[in-house]
Length: 133
Image (cartoon, rainbow, N blue to C red):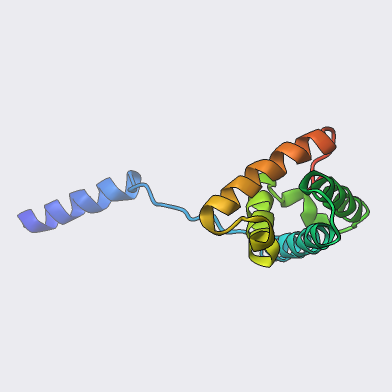
């Protein structure tokens, strides 16, 4: 009988006061696909400009402006869900993997450097715009 009341007590207690659960952040796959397309596009433009002899500043500004123009005129409704920091990470990884070795960027340090450099130039180049909006 004591077991029954003890079980009933715990049942009622957890029924009215459930334990806190952990939720995982899941993203929409279409947003990830759009981010992939944007980072691939940016990487192609940046690496091509570097191979054509542009300085890293000129190549960065050119790639940002060209990629921004494509995104601005895109009718994809998912672009409003792209976070600038996530996109900067993905762009940095893509550029370092595609052509980072040609200008001395490799590994995590190269990705971190390119990300901070990208965000700095991006803010200067397009202060009133946001890649995703």
